[in-house]
Image (tube, rainbow, N blue to C red; front, top):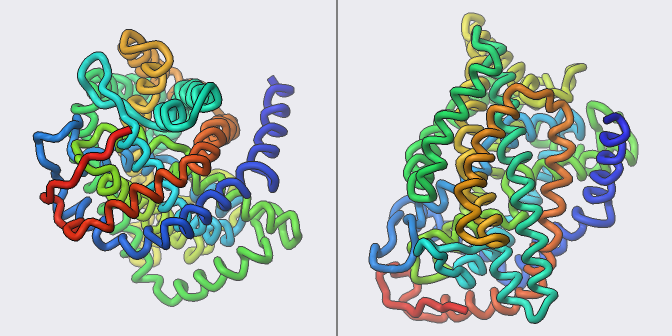
Length: 472
C-alpha cells in the first residue's frame, strides 16, 4: 500500500507539475478568454440576470430541467468539501499566495466553463428514456473527426465514471463523517448510513429530482456560509487589506506554511492554487457541461452564460470567503495547517471568538453543518455526472446499476480510512481534464462561431426572442 501511495504521489506530481496540467489549464483558459473577448467579465451582469432573475426557460423547448436548476446542479457538485477543506488545504500547504492562483483559475475558468457548457448543449443527444444527455464525451466524439474524437470521448467517460467515486463520493462522505462525528455522539457508520439513505432517495429519482433538491438547497447554503464569513470579516476589517496584500505578494514569493521561503515554495503555491481551484470549481474538468446539457434551452450560448456564473460564485465568492477568514485570523500558520477542514474550523472559531468569546465553540459547528450540506449536494451532482458517463459507454441499461453502486460507496467512504483520498482525487481530476482541454482547444472555432452568431442577433438580450436552436 505504501508503494501504491508513493507511486500515486509521483503520478500526481507529474500531472499537476509545471509541464502538464498547470500550463495547459492556463493556456486554454487564456486562449478562450482572448478568443471570446473577455466574455466572462463583459457579459457577467447579463449572465447573473439570466441565472437568478429570469431563471426559467420556455417549457416547450428541449431539456429536462430549467437553466437555474442546471446551474444549481453544477453548483451542488462543485460547492462542497473543496470550498472548505480543499481551499483551506491550499492555504495551509501553499501559503496565502495559493488564493491568488485560485483567482486566476477562477477568472480564466469562467471562459473555460462557458465554452464547455456551450458545447455541452450544442452536441447533446436524446437518450433512450427521452432525456437530454451531453457533456465532453459527446462533443469530443461528435465534434472531432474520426477515431481521435471517439477515443478522447471514451477516455473522458471512463475517467469520469471512476472519478465520481473519489472526488464526488468518497472524499465527500468521509469528510462529512469525520466532521459530524467530531461534534456529535454519532459514529461514522451511522452518519454514513443516514447520508446514504438521504442521497439515495434523491439520486434514484434522476436528474429532475436532483435539480429540484439542488435548486432548493444550494442558494440557502451558499448565502448562509458566505454570510457568516462576512460577519467575521466585518469584525476583523482591519486585517482584510493586509491579508489581500499578503495574498498578492506571496503569490510571487512562495511563502508556504510547509515550505518556507524558496522557489519550491512558489511552485507549491501555484500548484496548490491550480489543483484546489479546479477541484473547487471544476472549470476545465468538463463536468459542468453534463449539467448544462440537461437544461431546457433553445440557445447554447444563453445556457453557457448561465453556467459560467457557477465558477464566479464558487471560486471568486465562496472560496475567497473561506481563505480570507483563514488568513485574517492568522490560523494558516498553525502547525496542523495541512488538515483543511480543521483549519477552517479553527479560523471560524477564532473569528467568532473575536466577536464574542462565547461564540467560539460555534465555529466547529458552523463548519460541520456546512461540510455536511455542501457534501450532500455534491454527492447528488456527481452521481448524475457518473451515470451519464456510464450511459455513454454502455447505454441506458447501465444507469440504474451504477446508481446503486454509487449509493453503496457513500457508506463505504464514510467508514473507510481515506487519508490519501485527496491525492487520488487530484489524479482523477487531471485524467478527466486532459482530454477535455485538448477538445476545447480543437473545438474553439465552433465556440467562437456560435458566440459571434448569437451576439450578432439584434434581440439577443431578450430570452423570449425566437432564435434558432443551433444543433450539431
